[in-house]
Structure formats: structure tokens, C-alpha cells
Figure: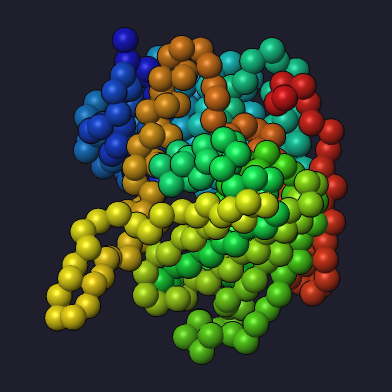
Length: 335
Ligand code: ISE
């Protein structure tokens, strides 16, 4: 039996999920869509097959046929829709961020933490990437010994319109924050942001690149280069240094071209192509898990902790000083 899904938000991310659900995810059916731009939602609904259209996400969540919800509307609306899903007892896959502020994330945690089971999953899709998964398996198997350092780079060819220096942390580095917590099984306790000379190719007034230094409660140091005007493609790097070896993300797959004395591979154009298989695995595993009655992906706690760290990164960028992360007590539900 297919899981009947409602999708709140039919912009870029919503369409990306809807298209995948309609074409390549098993045991899933999109039965309802909502968007404040109803005309857009109608166009997307036509392309996705039969789906009811609402102008308000709350009506979609209240639709009796909708068994599970994907929230892909703008970040500032995530809290209210996720809370509504919890109140309705419906599993929800909420795109990142869980909410843009720690206070809002804590309200979601409070609403869910009293339950005996989880309903909320946050869309940190990198945990479903084969490369990161292989890194985690290797680390957990003890191949590199106890971790000491992580070196990460997050490069985009060019920022989307309106992208700000803060968003390089809250929208981009937030992925490294989540994936490093997951890989290491440790929390981040402090952040410092260094600002080298601005690239002359970065749009004013973007502080691009930035170098973020994160400290974990296990004594690991993580450096993350965030560079959103790198020009040449979408390049995600991660190397973990342990006491007895290192493990790193592989170079991107694809053909290797040897021609005219040179050997080359392609650099992905953007995050959609780089992480398409991860998005697929994320959705399929979420659908399968919901049908089994089990939510195992990134939790509301992960959403809260990443927002808390990202907020401190923004503070560190503004002040030029090290900012300490002060996390709330972790509710038992997330142990
Ligand atoms: C974007 O919002 C994403 O989530 C991408 O995965 C990330 O690589 C990009 O930098 C963000 O702007």
C-alpha cells in the first residue's frame, strides 16, 4: 500500500521532491499540495498527476487522506507546519532548517519530546550520500583510529540572488555542521569564523570566502571553507583525520576523460546533481520507515543543534570572536 503524502510548498525544493515521488520512489503517492501561490500549486499538481490543491498548509495537514507530510515551504514557516503535523500525529519530513531560530526549534522539540515515538525528520540529505556513509562505516569500524581533525570545503560556483554572508553559514555550512555531528557522534561546543580577503569575483557585500572553525565536545577540531563564488563548479570535500589514518569523500564519479595529454573528470554543476542519489535515498528510506512505523533519519534534536551552532557561527562572524554553543538538555526521545 502506498503512503499518501501531502507536500507543503511547491517552490524549487517542493517540486524537486514531488517530481521524484511521482517518478522514482516506490510505495508513495502525492495526494495533496499546498502553496500560497495556488496557481503554481495547480500547475505542479497537473504535472504530478492527481493531487488536491490548497492555499494553506494547515488545510493540507488536516486533510484526512494525507498520512504523512513534506514541508518544503520557506524556512520561517517550518515551525508552524511542523507543530501542526505533531498536533495531528502525522509524520513530517521538514526541509532544513527545522526552524531559523533556536527558540523556534525548542518549541518543536517540546511538542515532540513528550511522545513515545518520533514524528519529525529534518531534511539533512548528506547523511544518505554514499561517500559520507562509507566514511562513517570506516570510522565506526576503527579503520583510522580515534578522530582528531576534520577538513571540509563547501564550494558553490555562484550564490543565488539575495544570498548573504550569514546565509553562507545558516544555509550552506549548516550541512557540514549536521554531517560532522553525525559522523563523529559528538556535539559542537564553539565556533569561530575567519574572514580572508574577499574574492574580487564575489558580489558586494558578500564576505566570500569564510573559514569556520568548529570545536566538538570530544576535542575534535573541524575547519570548513565556505566559498559560494568559486566559479568552477559545486565541490564538496571532507577529510577526517584519525590517530592512525585518514578517510575522505571520494572524488565525484562519472567518466574519466583522457585526451590531448590530460586526464579529467567533471565537477558537478550544482547541489542538485551532486546529491541527487542522496535525495533519492533520503525520500525512499523515509517512506519505507513511515510505512513500518519507524522514523530513523535526522531528528528534531539534530535540527535544533544545527540551528544552535549556525546561530553562534553568525555571532562569531559579526563579532570576530569565538562563540560558545550552549545546548539545552537532550530529551530522552532522542537518545
Ligand atoms: C543550499 O540551500 C543547499 O542546501 C545546498 O545543499 C548547499 O550546498 C547550498 O550551499 C545551499 O545554498
